[in-house]
Length: 163
Length: 100
Length: 119
Image (cartoon, rainbow over all chains, first blue to last red; front, top):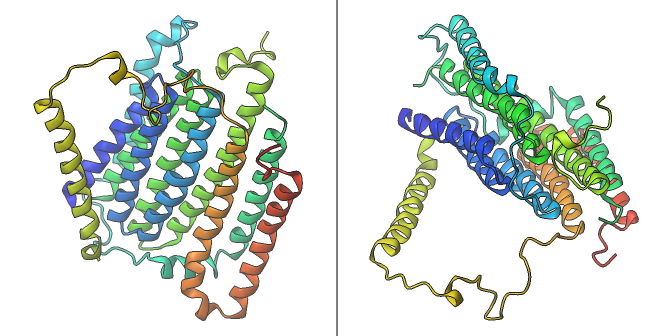
């Protein structure tokens, strides 16, 4: 189990770097799919079975399909980097390291090395998730449908005119 | 058994990479993809704490976050298409009508 | 708990090994004599015309968005179906409301003509 986590965590981080560093948008999209699938494995290792499946079906399936379609639709080619801000070039990387260090330090301070409250994984198959989702979180669930409805209306209104 | 804070490190790393993507890239589609990275970093934290507290609630939140990401991608990409129709560009720094 | 996921892991390893072996072996053993005809993209034997990166129709985007709508709906239906018996009428009514709201979106898309491919 432990080696699986390291393999897929490293894979996720490398693919995420590839998302940001690739100049061609299609390559970024493909790398993002790798990130999403590796994270599905990480969720599985955390015991979140249902979420892992949802991650692959909705995220890597539906959302990325939409991204790839829009990339084809807009015919997005390689992007040329702009040399607008010299300040950002020199200050960017150090500030980034400071930010990352701060985040990692904050996590490290709150969670000293040996903190794992319980070794057992929570049961999180569709049954457990459903029991919680449809009892305790009924209102958020119904609001979700309105969110999707609004998203659909917005997307149709924005895209309907002929391209 | 992997301790909880390793998952939080992974989330922090993905979050930082996503922020870098949002700040440095010009292509709006890639900026939107970096936002998806940030949302995933949040999801890792939610699921890791779901195990830490032995409660499934975190995973229900994560499902809502994924649903939200779906809605956000649909509307965001619709905005990009509408923008492309008007300005013929997908570069964020060329959409600067409001800039002095 | 992870025992049932072992086949997927095995599948994953086999896929990586087989794909790597095919790519690696053909790069290592294969004879490469590139010519102009061989390097051009294969389009069912017809000579390629124009650029493959032409712009696509907006209908693809609308269909992809519809796909997301129903994908999310199915994703919520699945745990609902598993716990349906213990929820009883309460569960029936909440899912009924959910589907009615999504159906309104579907009808809107239909009326707007986003499903007509030729327009």
